[in-house]
Amino acid sequence: MKIEIWSDVMCPFCYIGKKNFEQALEILPFKDEVKVEWKSFQLDPTLELVETKTTAEYFREKKGFPEEQAKQMTNQVIQMGKSSGIDFNFEKALITNTFTAHKLLHLAKKHSKSNEMEEELFKAHFLDGKNVGDIETLVSLAVSLGIDAEEAKKSLQSEEFDYEINQDILEAKNNGISGVPFFILNGKYTVSGAQPSEVLKNALTQTYEETVVPFKDNTQNNLSCDADGCSI
Image (tube, rainbow, N blue to C red; front, side, top):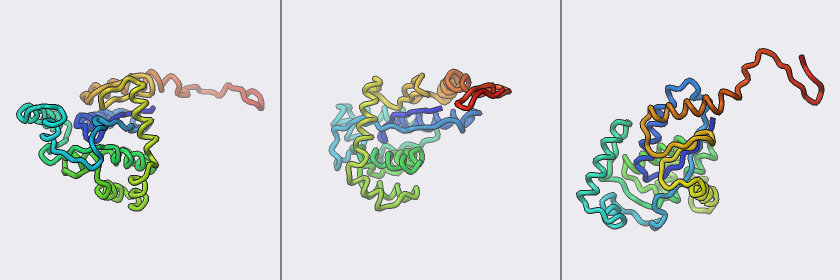
């Protein structure tokens, strides 16, 4: 069963959604039959690639929110994060253009480590206050997962994964996705937002029962025909 998840590195609800999804999946008996594919999405592609802002600066300059309102919003997210096992540190988080970080995610996908890289990027941004737009920072994350430093640097400095990223973003637009996280469950159902693990568990179970179970081979014999004839 395939689960596609659109997210952005600087989206706190995407991190919460990831944790809740993992909690839901862990208790399901068919978890080993689930394949997760992370898709790229940019909440603010207008940011300059070398630009960084604190969370407070970003809310004030880009969104027009006064400091007190921004603080209230982040405090609410902090509380939500705690219930999902995340200790958000918005005081240290640096807002930046995430296109280069998405290049690293696609490189990690090539090495079958996209889920691990998604986690490392969220931690770097929200917990450690690292600049996830900085190439050296991203290379160090790649190395931590066993990806060659030179390969990572070359990918991040080139247009190798630009097409894939833009295709993800276009696919999101074609699917009417305007916010993240956004889950498409085996091409049939969708779940939007950082839903509780119980909601995700129920959605995953329903999708599995409707799209996977009917196609499982539960027969006791092999009555079939092929090019060589029929077997009885």
